[in-house]
Image 1 (cartoon, rainbow, N blue to C red):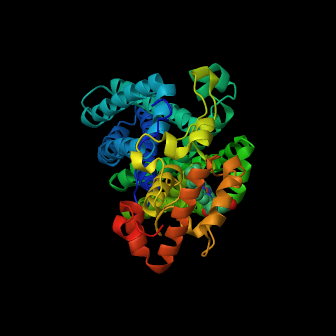
Image 2 (image 1 turned 30 degrees about the vertical axis):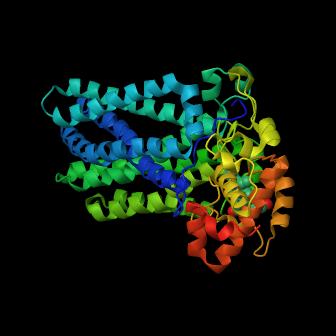
Length: 473
Ligand code: HEC
């Protein structure tokens, strides 16, 4: 039994791919969470001004914006946040496990901050006008500090998915060297500033409902200056973030990043700046529709490619540059007693080490057994990044020539992939039997997909029909 490695069953999502399920939930979540943290800073600013400049009408705006956030950020954010957990846990159990093992106390701390935030937003909404302004300012300050605390912690953990803050972490295993590093600070700065941009736009929903013209003008101009400042600083910090990335990622960025991403992100900054210029010039025109249009444009043009790019540049790893996207541990972490599983994989293959493989497929003989074993190997080793059907993430058949034979594929599996020469794919040193069955399966899938894509998809997901394949040796 000690031959096995700790792989889990794979989550096959044949339509769009498990990765996109997480990506879609996460992108929306980023909008909700950033809108809330940015708003918390605006609240603290306005509450302070309510006290020091004697502007109690600001409290009214905070109450209205807070009530909007209760639904927009807190209800929807609390649905999408655990949504990411559920999706990521089944898509990538070992990646999540790596994050939890390294950051359990930081995560616990984050949840404490969340609780304070949730209590805080209720206090700000329901006690507005019912407690002295100075007390209200204290609530707003605590709300702002705990909100920024959640951002700080989650960015450190997200950065670790790219790589540990400091390279000596592999030797020391210390949580602080996992957490802090230049790239983490750069990512924190990018998120912090673009968060102000998001707040500038989303705040428009609450500003639109403000009836007092002077107050509306003040709020609209505050939001637009804040948003424009965030857009300019965020763009500058984005270059810092790119320059802080490890040299290995240059390869992945150069070959993998769609050119349209840069243009889309540039366009979203442009849209935001134009919106802020307009609302600063004509504060009375701040209304629901323009705010909604600007929010959707920022989500689609800015956040979606931004978060996708972050996913692309950590390929082929999923956490700490030691867990591959396909769950295999690909390098030693001496400090944690973690050993690379590649040597074992090279010796015993997926067929010999995967715990969730039917025994009859460990040493496949018939054509049907070989195809099914190849399918299991493909699901385990490749499906996290390549769809085995014709839709979804990077459908496998697009990467092999249309008439690729099993022998061609087997040669390829033994060459580049074996030694890890392809920057964005895991090194996969598979023994001969694994390579043979995987190649046989891939060749059959590519052939079937050309003839009958629906049937091919059905076989890839449900398995090959035994009676049809058994006799063909
Ligand atoms: C960590 C994610 C990941 C895993 C796991 C993975 N690949 Fe890839 N693979 C990629 C990416 C990214 C590309 C580049 C795709 C593109 O060009 O859009 C790629 C490209 C390819 C190509 C094209 C060759 C090339 O030089 O670009 C082939 C063939 C391929 N993969 C086969 C496989 C097979 C077979 C497996 C399983 C044994 C596998 N991949 C596992 C991410 C992965």
